[in-house]
Image (cartoon, rainbow, N blue to C red; front, top):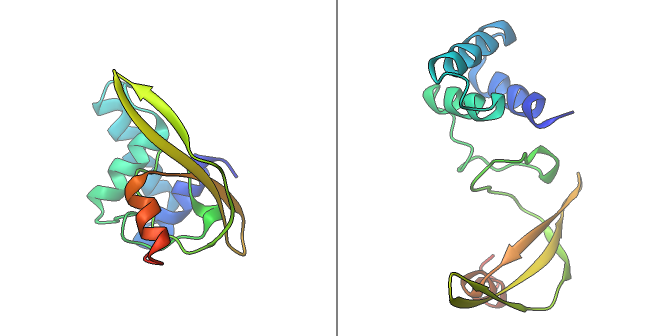
Amino acid sequence: MDNYSKLLDRIIRSSNLPLEEIEKRIEAKKAKLSGLISKEGAAQIVAAELGINFDQERVKISEIVQGMKRVNTIGKIVRMNPVRAYNKNGKEGKVASFLLADETSNIRANRNRQTKRRIYNRDI
C-alpha cells in the first residue's frame, strides 16, 4: 500500500466519510492550489480541515507515511547507531539514529541531544 492509500485509509477511519467524498475534496484542494501540492499533501490538508490531527493520534509503525512531521508511536529500540558529527550552515551538531520496532514493522529514526536525554531518563 502506497503513502497516499495509507493516508486515505486513515482519513476514512477517522472521518467516517465515504472514499468518493474524500477523494473529491482532495482533488478540489489540488485544483485550488494549482497543482502545486502532491496528493499526499492535499490529503493531509483535507484531514486537518476535517479536524483529524495525526500528531496526537498514536499510530503503529506500519501506518507511518512519508511526509508526516510528528508521529506518536510506541515501540522498542532494537538498535542504536553511534553518534556522528555534522556541519550545517557553519553550525556543528551531533546526531545518531536508532531502529525502532513494534509488532507491525520497524523504522529508522534520528536522535539529537534532547532525544538522547529523554531516552537516557526513560522518558521516551
